Length: 454
Image 1: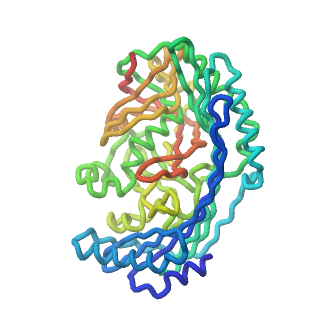
Image 2: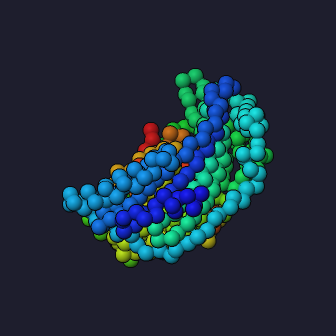
Image 3: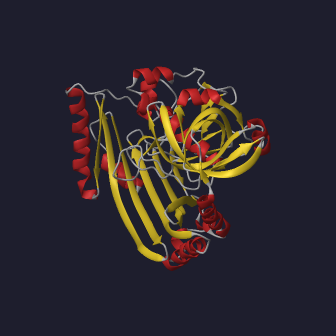
């Protein structure tokens, strides 16, 4: 395939040209309660052509090989037009030339598992949750996505890589009279089908938590000292901080770019944040991005000081900073944009019991449940939590939102746990969906967090 791609862009009159061919496969099985609502698989493929000329840069996408010549023409014409009409000049940072094929290493290839077996596994977990007390219904999906990518550019880079992610995910809903509570559940990864097996306890526990929330009291709104669970800490890290580490987000925002200047002290001394998609077997794992650049671990913050940023080749050149391999597209319909892979707060030295003792009185808030950001301000939901009195976990609370300012919150982080948990379900909707966008962290103790509730 690589030789065919090279021939398609050979002789193009441009300063730079690349082409990505991709085959995307997807399988979905959805249960609502005990009813199967959807079972299906599909396969799509297509090409993305990018061209740079005279400082302009443009993209064209097509689904048929016979349309490639015209796509190349359109990309070159688009690049010329951008400069002719006063558009932004784009320069690609230099990167090493590579020629590599990345083979899949799976513990159980999901492509070798029948659709019936996948359906029965999903049904088993779904039924386990429905059997728990007070459970009204569920919405559970088996999802399997494969991306077979082949990339070549005019500089000589040739990369082929295949990625397959498998998940079983959704929510379980408990009801009593007019009170309804839901809890999310997700298992999966990029290391094979066998990760999904023997996970009954995960689903049972999540359903039991949903049932227990019916007896919980709504949290009382106020300002609290809190401990965030690893997943909720991960949501904060990804949503509130991580997007500001994506160079294209701040590129044309002078005030935010100033606040996010490398070398600035933004957080307390205990917090360090890493983006590392080289961790094997995780949902965020990949070797090369969609520009044919090897992904590198990036320390974004070290002891509260901003030390790194995520880049495509274009933004790395614009900022004068190192290329990091974080240009990722949803699939063959899109050009790559700067995206987080696996982002997390680095573990500290204290276990959960020590954090609870240090907290004294406050709240222990667990798992993320949606939310939004507006500039440097954020609001996130927590799936559930517990009151903490004298370092002891007490009554369960529900209907929790946390809110605050990113930079104030970073300064208020007091202690970091010594554990690390990474999400088994990826996803980020910045412009395009990125299933390889994972998050996580240790437990984190934060002072003076505003909590919305009753």
